[in-house]
Image 1 (tube, one colour):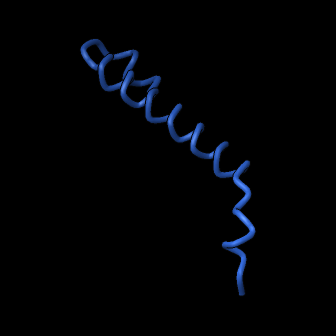
Image 2 (image 1 turned 180 degrees about the vertical axis):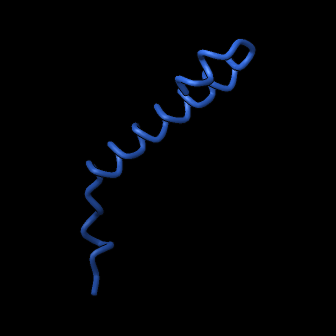
Image 3 (image 1 turned 135 degrees about the vertical axis):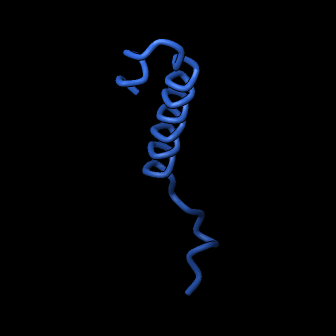
Length: 43
């Protein structure tokens, strides 16, 4: 992403990559905090 910002004309791609990074971090935090319901733990 840093290399795309140094080149002119690639700001839209760098912004897209930044958005994807934020989305991946948000999903990782949600997955780490997720506790499955008890009814899914049937073995």
